[in-house]
Image (tube, rainbow, N blue to C red; front, top):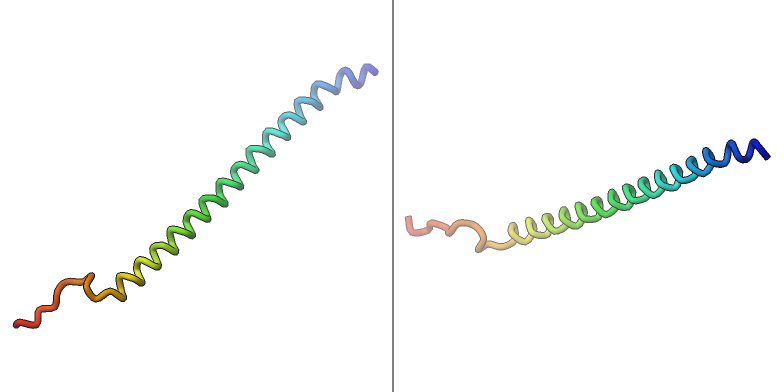
Length: 67
C-alpha cells in the first residue's frame, strides 16, 4: 500500500500533463486545418478573380485607335 501512496501523485500529474498536451496538439491540428482551408479558399477566389479579369475586355486601358 505504501507504493501506491508514493506513486499515485506522480501518476496523476503525468496523466494531467498527458491530457493537457493532447488537447494542445489537437487544437494545433484543428488550427492548421482551418488555416489550410482558408488558404485554399483564398487561392480559389484569387484564381476566379484572375480568370474573370482576363476574360473581361473592359478591365484594361482603353484602346487608342484614333492615332
